[in-house]
Amino acid sequence: MNTDQNTDLSASLDAARRDYAALLERKLKLDLTRGKPSARQLDLSNEILALPGDRYKSADGTDCRNYGGPQGLPELREIFGELLDVPAGQLLALGNSSLTLMHDTVVHALLGVLPGARRRWADEERIAFLCPVPGYDRHFDICERFGIEMIPVPMTPDGPDMAEVERLVSADAGIKGIWCVPKYSNPDGTTYSDETTRRLAAMPAAAPDFRIFWDNAYAVHHLTDEEVQVADILAACAQAGNPDRVFVYGSTSKITLGGAGVAFFGSSEANVKWLLGHRGKQTIGPDKINQLAHVMFLRDADGVRAQMRGHRELIQPKFDAVRRIFAERLDGLATWSEPKGGYFITLTVPDGCAKEVVRKAAEAGIALTPAGSTHPYKDDPRDNVIRIAPTFPDVAELEQAIEGVATCVRLVGYEKLAS
Ligand code: PLP
View (tube, rainbow, N blue to C red):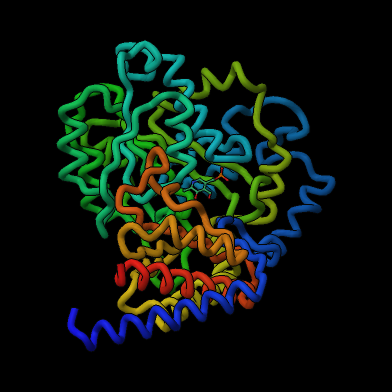
């Protein structure tokens, strides 16, 4: 560094220290950890609270008040079949959480023999999943819970690094799965290219029971006019001669009510039959009353699209605010994702700084998702990824919090440069 650069850096560091001291004085109490809809978003679905009213019969006359109908209501499966690219006959509408379905399919694969498998996963010597990083911590938690080894694979702008995925999956019969959030992924907003989808469907796999866990949580959660589409993975798998390779998941958690919506599972006929067989031991049928309420409220796929425009109106200004403040305050010091949909922004700070930024923010009363949680075993080897969840706070609170985060990044970043 020459003398001028040294002087600039020392001035920047002094300013960052003053800003941080002022931030501490403000004694904030703000939370950016939660990828949850705000109360105003939930208000969009208040009508559901009064549905289905005194109606209890589905389109085919089924009495939804009673047990039965393990696949879920056909009219709801029609609506979401169109949105999730799964034929309604191969889509199940089940409980309230897609995460539960992911957890349970892993458990059923551990304890029961999957179509195409030689034995239960629990009887294998070793089970591993590929984990594109950065990724969703709750996927990784499922693996950790059941002792499934996690192998990180880097994300590219087109999805996971497919050369690496193909190399690993074709050579290692212990690799039984890959976690995928194909659209507006959590946390970096990436959407898989058609080529990535095609290669995932067609690649040779050493394990005959290899599965893609296709968590399409943000299938309709657009933030721009460009409503990004992903290729139809189920059709691609069938075309490639691997019809049983993919499990598709989705839910209405961030369409209607978080935790009080409906979750979906879609797959080949063989996989659907396999799951229904196991679920038959767990439940005598899903909550069809809530499903009926969802049908009455959403009406059809266009009704879902209209509902999502309502969400976009409320949350796009929040994503814009984060982007604006980062551009004003962090240009040259950090980078951030510019998602076209979904719920998160990934902030990439200088290597070795993420934990310290999160710690400094916490001291200033701003809660951020713990650094490392975007990686298997909570270990981000470069310690540079921070997940920002802008949807829950109102815009004024969010702006305060993001200004505060920017102050912390400047302080930690300049301290690192000066060291
Ligand atoms: N999958 C992803 C990628 C998510 O980001 C989330 C919630 O943040 C979920 C699943 C949870 O979905 P559900 O509410 O249907 O369990």
